[in-house]
Structure formats: C-alpha cells, structure tokens
Length: 275
Image (cartoon, helix red, strand yellow):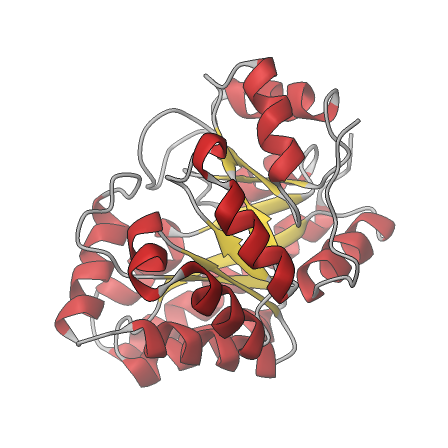
C-alpha cells in the first residue's frame, strides 16, 4: 500500500478523515477565482460553505485550459476579463479557509512555474490552503514541485483517469497526498447525463494500490449522480453544474439557484449508503 502524508495534517486531510469516520463522502465544490466577479466569487464560496460543502477548489483561470469543458472555459474567460491575477486566487483561497472549509487551488503547471514553485507553495500555505491540484503535471516532472509543497506543508494532488495503467497509478499514488483525483471519464469537464461505469472501476483499482482517499470528479452534476458516486468514493467533486447556475441571469438569481443546487447535493451525498 502506498500513502504519502505530511507530518502535520492539513485541513483537507482532517476533513476527509472526519467524513470517512462518519461513513460518508466529502463534498468538494469548484469555482474559478474571480468568477463571476471578485465579490461574486466570495458570495458563491459562502453559499457552498453555508450549504455544507466540506471543501472548495479555487480554479486558477488560465487561457489554455486543456482539461476544461465549455462551461468552465466560459467562466475562466470571464474571470480573465475581470483581470484576475495570482493574488486574487490566493485571496479567494483565504476567504474559503477563513470560513472554516478546506481550501485547495486547481491550476495548470504554467502559472506555478511563472510564479515560482517555492513561492507559490508558500503563498498557498500563507492563505491557509491545504494543497494544489495539478491536472497537467506528470509524476516524471513532479519531484521539484513535491519538494516545494512538502516544505510548505501542503498537499500535492494528482489526477488519474480510467486509461491510467496500474503501474502508473502506483507511481502517481507515491507522490500524492491529501487525495487522489479520479477523473470519472476520458475527456474534459462538463455536466453529463450519467456517470460512466469506469469511475467505480477506477476507484476499485486505486484502492488495491493505495489507502489514500479518492475523490471522483468530471461530469458529476446532479444530486442523483453525487449520491451514486458517494456510495463508493471518499469525495465527490462538483464543478460545471455549480458554475452553470451562475452563468445565466444576474448574480442574485444565480446565487439563489446555486444555493438550491448546493443544498440538494449535500443532502444527496449524506444520504448515500456506502458500499
């Protein structure tokens, strides 16, 4: 079994441990920093935390998002037009953690490299953040980042897919901490009408190789899908479905719709019967 944990538990690790002890999956929401506006983003984070989400992923808006589907791309474009910079990402992270939720940043590698890996890891820690999800960083290139993150006391969260071989899963698990991000399918983010069987199969394969918590994302969009994933995963990640509520109409109506969906997702996740 392979597991990597920091000497001092991050808030994320504590949240996942508590959820496991309560025999439920943790609920993790994704929102791009500065979307739909800086203040609107803070309000959306408040809605998720107040509704009972355990953790929030703050997305670092990026101009070439290879993993993101059209909904997240549109939100990221809006954030970029708002002039969002690294400081705003850290500010949204700090807002999340000040509300008592676990906070992580999801970013492609280029912004970290431009900012400086050590400086970026230290900024995450200073904002009370638990770690960083790096979807396009391979384990072959990850050791310098792993060193910087460990020095800052934050988690390094890597993404695996149904196509990932067992040998590669083992290697990814060996440099991952916090949780392993299991992509439910091949392709980009977005809402789906159903969750692929490959998601549960991937979780089963990972459990044979690692005792790290496993969170499933990509395509989980309805309370019914969240409940289904919560029966076998340690965490359920929701992104596009939340953002979709904020893309239509004004901020107040968007936040109201977001609150309704968030509360439904929390209730569904908590009611799931664990396998």
